[in-house]
Image (cartoon, rainbow, N blue to C red; front, top):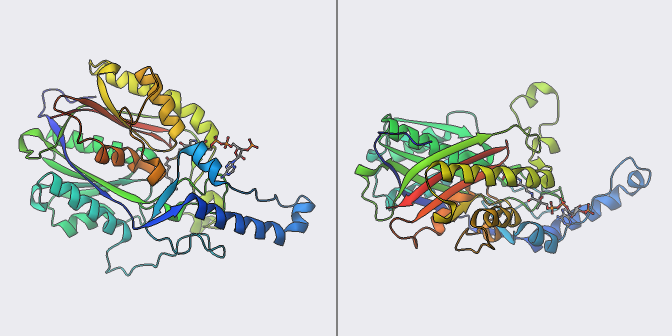
Length: 378
Ligand code: CO8
């Protein structure tokens, strides 16, 4: 949708925090395979009599071929490769310390603010939107708002893979309708704590990152690099194929709060098959509803879950074999970063476009959820 007869709204700055630590496929596979081999040896009897299933081995070649992922970044690497632990070792912070998500959100936020020439005094709302927040309240967005000295309000929202685009939609609507003049939308995707590093089918998928953007009225923008938002479109359709049951109710459910179903799990093949046609249709419908032909779109900044999904979808949209000029891939370096993937791609690969060029930012995945923005370089 586009809000008609309202002030034009632009994305006037973006930011990206990349963690210091890299975990390569080879490192991850070596530690997973050592863990699985030991598990199989220790449980040989139960595996032989069929009470337990043997843990299959992983392969770096499979991971790269099936997903396009070569490595991922981790906020904390310590513990992930330790076969006696298989999860990052993240110390709990005191209540008077900055939370991890606020810390990484602030780094991306300050970059976005600098790019848009904004200070805290210029911003009147903060949205933190991501796949998980590390606590229910107070909102991470309010913590960030406090640190940046921003008046107004902040709130957190969760929409899994589409949190970033859905957050940008809310920012656009607030600015277009006049409830805010300038919104800081941030995606601190701290997701390695939700990865089951003992699950061969998903241990390689995710990495940590934070992205941020400034969305404001065009007439207040002084940015050297901004994009006018021509339209937004969102769509959801319930599916159990990507799921996490982590919950505050584990306390009263008398279940293991750290059980495998509490971590990310999926039927990846099914997701691939169902989401690709949904995303293709969504994008065609959205672009054409703005009076724009698909051939006029210079760049597609797509969700980064799987390179083969992105090639499949882009091929349908551009009608030929796509290249990185059409739809940049950051998966090889960053892996799947939940909702931040399309924003990383946008942040890294938008400056070469020239005034008047059209592009689309789009996320797709868990929910299922799909969110997109059609934008034009100013
Ligand atoms: N090593 C070696 N072999 C493997 C491995 C491995 N690591 N994993 C699977 N195999 C084997 C399988 O056992 C299978 O063997 P067989 O043919 O003998 O049965 C064979 O390889 C093929 O397996 P699959 O059919 O499962 O493999 P795919 O080609 O489908 O690739 C993928 C698997 C990469 C997972 C692929 O299906 C995929 O990427 N699908 C899309 C997934 C997707 O988009 N999911 C949405 C993600 S959700 C999101 O983006 C945000 C969620 C919120 C954040 C969560 C934070 C934790």
